[in-house]
Length: 185
Image (cartoon, rainbow, N blue to C red):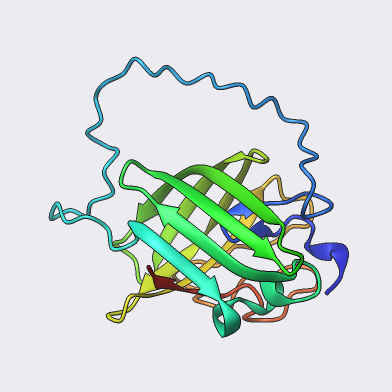
């Protein structure tokens, strides 16, 4: 893999330049007004009031890692993700050297499509937006494909429910390179 992947989403987070260096120039100061106690839109439920199947802990390792993340650019051995009902997520990626990378932010989902769509607003280590799709089968296997869309200097194109899995496109990507599988923990 080449360094042309510098702005691909790291599963749920993103890197810029060296995937292990936070070179963000964005002011990460929290300007959110936390005084609002109306949380009616923070539980990821479908129209029937059922909680999203995405909520919970997920692990990707071994042959479930995407070719992109297991390959020579990222060299990941595992990626764990936790999606919380309040719309937040936490991802931890571990590379072959044992270094750990934590990524956090918020997410919004649309489960009226097949596969479902997801929008991620990463807060740390860099502020970025990512978009993509996911699907959970009856065996609690999560198929997941997202890519950074803002900023997006390499013009990567995110997968959509219409284009399906394996459709992330951009410089240096082959179909399916960015498709990740996770097992519920």
